[in-house]
Length: 257
Image (cartoon, one colour):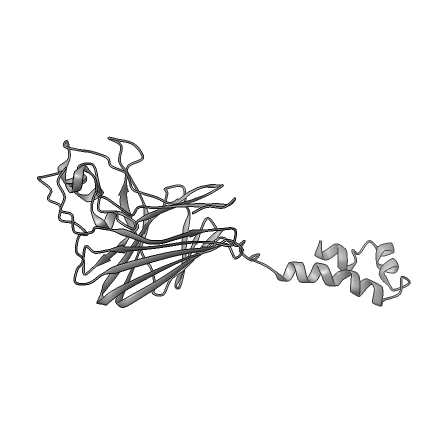
């Protein structure tokens, strides 16, 4: 998904090594997102293969990626002592992909939780600059959405809204939980970054990401400025302003500015 301002990439397909995992992670239907100004929603990386099996196990787990976890279960079975093996239950499929000047639409299904089936729809409205992520399940479940942010992103929470760098708004159905999570920008390097977790009981969850410019913190200043010329035209030029200027007292306009 892309336009001049936003780029998003979604993983939906095979897990690698002919269905045995290999270098693959439990990240089916996970996505990453960037704008012209930089990365926002990111993949946490790899960090290690065999030197730190505990870390390796985390970095390829479902909770480490920007995907939905149902009932706290892994998408595909993984074991700490077998860092390159993975079960293949997800069998993710892309059911719809549409891209035009107005919108991009992706619909994918993850069968890892059969008999429950997870459907993720990501819809980008290019004119509104809004990305809507809809999660649906065949049966009710404990749903957890994990979103990991680049370390450069400043995060602020206002109720059910998450503000990123004072530019992007994420509107959530539930109050987000902010956590620290491991992050590896390159192999062998590890640090921390922020993530949010959205938890809900049910069979659907909708999250919206808006790229529209945020309103000014103090809009009244603009209102006052636009009204000032009107106030000046209503009063004759011979008002007492000139007398105040003679005494050295600044007029109303000079006090404001």
